[in-house]
Amino acid sequence: MIIPRVPVQHRSLLPDRRLSGPTPWVIAILMLLTLLAAAAGVGLARSANAIGDAIAGRVTVQIVTANPEMRAEQAAALLDRAAAQPYVRSARAVGRDELLATLGQWFGSAEGDDPVLESLPLPALVDIDLAGPDRADQMRALRALVAEEAPGARIIPHAEWLGPVARLIRSLAWVAGAMVVLMTLASAAIVIMTARAALGTHYATIEMLHLIGATDRQITRLFQRRIAIDTAYGIALGTAVAAAILLLIGWQWSGVTAGLAATASLGTAGWALLLALPLLAIALAALTARQTLLAALKKIL
Image (cartoon, rainbow, N blue to C red; front, side, top):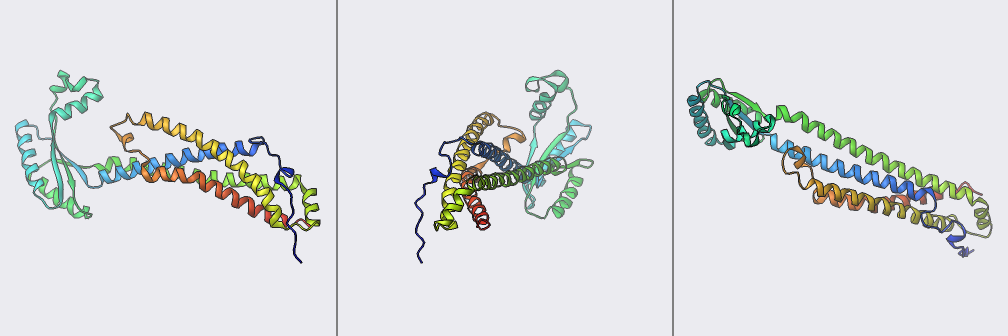
């Protein structure tokens, strides 16, 4: 027996007004928050990775000998010896002007031109970037080298004071990722409740369609199309607002050129993920609605 296709239009089952019910608006809010959380997670993860790469093998040798001439001699000797080592990628001496400018930012002196700062006995600093993955052996060799050329100098690995910052930023990125997952589940729950509410509202009509030979899949298509359209409108609205917010933040962020904030960016992969999320959300909503409707219709005689 061939079951005829029931010529029932979706407009006779569900209202055709755009953005009329609460579902599109709730989905729009969730999509907005999902995109903002995803952008924050990607930016924080990239920032943590950038900081980790920058500090992985970087150390600063601080020469604090009281005699300024001896400090300069030890710094020059250490710089020459370090630059010639195979485990050193690069080495540079931090100039006095650079130190004064850095201190001036903390003491409120423009360009570090404060007479008080000029009179301070500043240490000699040598920044060294280690090459290769074997950090333990490299640090032992570097300590031996420093002990020869600059006895009493201190070796300060950047990972000791920036490592906790990188771990904190990475933890925040994981929190943002968890928020994306939770809001995705919340969106799926909204679609499920919408589908069940639609079936409950039109229970009598569904029974009549069953009696005249309509299959569960035919009825599902009628409801699924309406739910998918409402969800798509909400996703489009939330995406548009999120895009405006992200563009505004990106425009303001473009002025940040120094500090930890300058390492945070979305990158090509991040923007691709943000563009894919609305499409994935529409597909997930359609699939969720379909499975919910089919499961519920099997219980309706």
